[in-house]
Length: 472
Image (cartoon, rainbow, N blue to C red; front, side, top):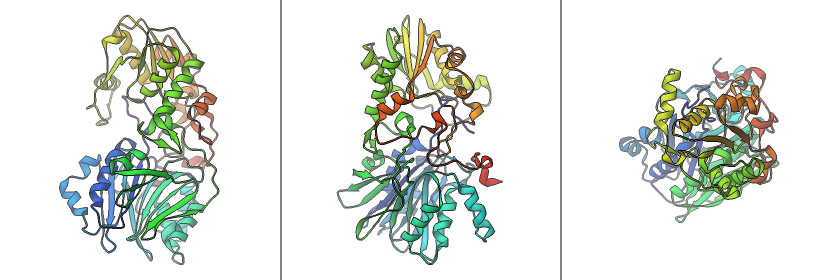
């Protein structure tokens, strides 16, 4: 599995985006803006499809949105009468980071050309794919998204809506997808709602689908509602249509609120920023400690640190500066290089000098970066470092679209809290409890499989747990 050594976080998922405009619009530019807003969800590849009802243009490549789509490539996607588009930013949780695995995926069918962009994982993708291979199906990629596209394409006796609903019933896991034909935009979500998908609308009547509300705002759309778990929605000249394909069993991914989603929005009716503040407040109630300042690990620990400071009455301060230009540009080859990369990305401020510091972060995966951050604060003169974490210990891998480590690499699966404290060199260490996290986020239910090992949307076969499983 691949990690960002300077954060030691679960890797990002993917971001999907779609537009249906009843009147001609510059959908290539709008899709570009939407994908740029979702860039935090995947930095390996970007792509989009645009159609005017006759032409169907596709472009995708490895790299960030701004690297893939310069003016020349955007001009190649600009159709004067464009009505439908979809886009994708990718982090590979199934299949290698190769150009042929970039999305959207496209195929020619008796329903015309189809394009699919997918966030999440299908846990039974390999068994379904093997069955289809025995029946003569052809696959051009090694990611599980193509299994969904093939299921839809092969149902030649069904229309597009019926075929998509049928495919939803055959695949299990956590997923949110956008699908387009030359004339129609579709969006659908697994019955557990593990992966997010929201609906928005612009003043000119254009409909928007996106992984997060931030992408709606980027194109001038207002949030209408979430796509419901198990729901299939589609947009055409008749507007918005909806079909409940499977009964709702909502258990959305708790890490959307802990870490992944941008703080300027809400998912499933729960405000991201406010939920992070509540996590910090709950953590302060559960795990108080005497100290002088509360310091976040930027940026993902900021909300919880605000909440911890608010509840405890201990002042909040920025004790770590994050270099905004230190992106995910390389994998450091040696331990020394990895430590230098952390210092390139984070540096302590004078606020910690001579202080007892409460350091707040959202998670600990392997513990290596946490240890380096604690050392940075001590070198800067911190008297004490008390580490507080706004998620419970991560003890199990995710099978629904987050690239966490193999279980043996998850420090909390092999070490006690006290052993982790010794490993990272903190004076004290404490995690929020699982009940406390659920209370802080609220909502109708949550997936906490990475904390408990209880997987609401099923698990893959034992030999399918690697993200390269479809390559063998």
